[in-house]
Image 1 (cartoon, one colour):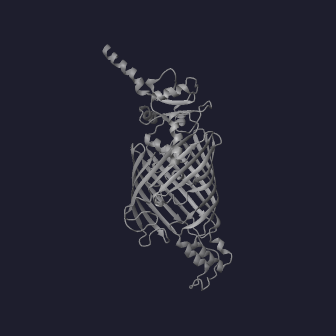
Image 2 (cartoon, rainbow over the protein chains, first blue to last red):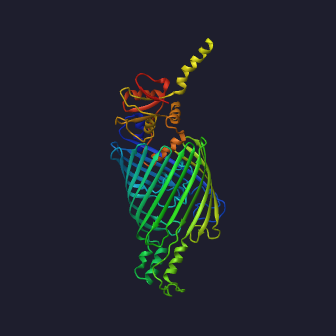
Length: 391
Length: 137
């Protein structure tokens, strides 16, 4: 609380004196989201059950930004998420320095620029939906520690913006299936965006060394090593090259808003499947009411195991399948494909707040593994209501 | 016939205020010429300088001021909610912050008259000779 006053003091003095040389801004946003699945199929991709729940997606955030003059500023964003029992955590914390009119360098804890809405994933007020399409926004980690160079140019009537990044991620991966402490080392990437009037488009490429010693994959790597010594490294996520490619465009023409994004994720030399996802969303603005529809889909690509045809020793696997056959069954067990239809409406009932209703219908198409429900994988519905605000 | 002409006359005089009711103003010593798109870029934080290279400080009015809504819809072509959403994208990513807001036309006139770097907007009928009108919407 004392800290709060320390931050507030210069802010109050700013209100009194327009020419203050250093200033502190406090902004915030919040989303209160209630959701309920139409039936209890434990669809893992939905954080809800058939009972109404306010917790999984509600959040409250404060951002404090100190402008230290001469282009230097410090920003921290603290978020309390319902999913995390409303424990407040730093989501962003960085120093920013304007090198010149076109370039700003940032250092600290920053957001990975994967998608169009990555930078303001949590700010529900800034997009039409209650949450960005899940099939697309599927990566569970979203921040890294490192550097970012933001550049802005104008070329005739086009605004061009790029974000070059370098850093690391330390996080708990595969949280819903087998939580594992892992690292993404030497992440580098670029997000390049062009925009003009009603059109904008981006391309993003992020590459990294993936080190995530998940127990389930490690145990398969040991089996592989036992049959074909040295082959475990082709199974383990032991500093393997992983990359992300994303593309997207937005058309905001008169009252129409059309959004589409596509991405592909792959990790080499590992027991993982490449996956691809995309969505398209169309919205129409009637003054302060905006109905929208979205179609989204994600699927894995089948991969063929090709390490050794030797049989697995009987003491490891009684049926003694060939290593390749065994690995193939593990790979195929990870396959999934699902799509979802969304219909919703955003109502700007206040200058700083929006009310949203959304219905999602998820359809499992291929679901051998852990993503959906085993009992009834065909489909699941979800109703959600949200109030998003900024202040 | 004479009566009819007399009726039209006040309509013509009024029309100036009806159609051009928001004036974008700068300090009289500011010699930059700017069109609607350049003004909109300044107020949306897409550019930070006048055409001559000097620093531009755009000045907003608070939401409650009548000039704000008119300026947002006519010059920026955005509703108040759209503008809030636009700025929240920049504010919460550290990429920018909206111009400062003052309470009313008088505060804008005073600040613009005292600083050649400030650009503001006011109702066209409060203009004084201490400021220069860049354009009207």
